[in-house]
Length: 415
Image 1 (cartoon, rainbow, N blue to C red):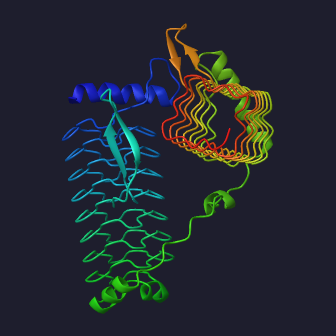
Image 2 (image 1 turned 180 degrees about the vertical axis):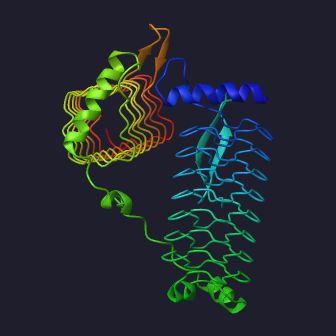
């Protein structure tokens, strides 16, 4: 792919994320994009698994929730990039520059194995231990709070002045790494190899350092009795920012809904598009409301009432919809990638394909990596939905419609 073709893909991706016609998600798994520029592009939720991005320019690129597992980012420049909850498992970022990057809750743990099917299609076929390679990477002045680096390889990486509070660094090879001025408060260093690491000015608890390997003698003892694997994370881990966030006043929400209706009715000439991104709407009553084309990435909607609501082509990726009521809601073409829909009521909801551009194009409802464990799916239409890597364990799918749905890596459990 050349630069001109890549630019067109990025432009169509922006249209897709904004719910505009002629848009399409950036889907470039295993493409060779070496040396090309994605600087400043918004690639939220893009599929770039296994992509070759060696020496690529990714300065200031937004890669929130993007799929980059197994990607080759050696020598790439990601200075100032944003990678919130980006999947970088098994990625190779050896020698990459991530100065000032925002990498909160980024996942750099074990990578996935890929292979070709009989028809030549490249696809994920399973997971094998394969540590992400960050050797000699420059991760200075970055925000890596609560990042997951368990078992990865980061020898001689530069974490100077980087925020790693609450990060999981257990069993990570950090020999010769530079943590000068880094914030390691609350970080899990159990079994991490810190031999030769620089910790001048670092904020780190003495108890955490006691669990790390600091000397050759420590390494010898760890070889005889390796540290136990960390316990699995709590299934409903709360995010401090969400807990402390004040709820959006009902009066303000009503005004925003009126402005959105005006925006829809005038084709965007008047009013304002509804933007609930990151807002706290826990328990809000949005029953029957028109939320078509609304934005709500990472919104908090636990126990919200959305029965009969219109959410066509709305963007609620990463939203917390636990125990929300979405019965009979119109969710055609909605984006719910990585959304939490545990114990959600979706009875009679429509997550089928959305006809756009006078029927010339179909838009899928996207629930990539969404968590629907225990959700009610009675008579739910999910025909054509993208459920790649989604979790549907414990769901009653006996009357759900899943015709032509994408189910690669989907955890279905018992029907």
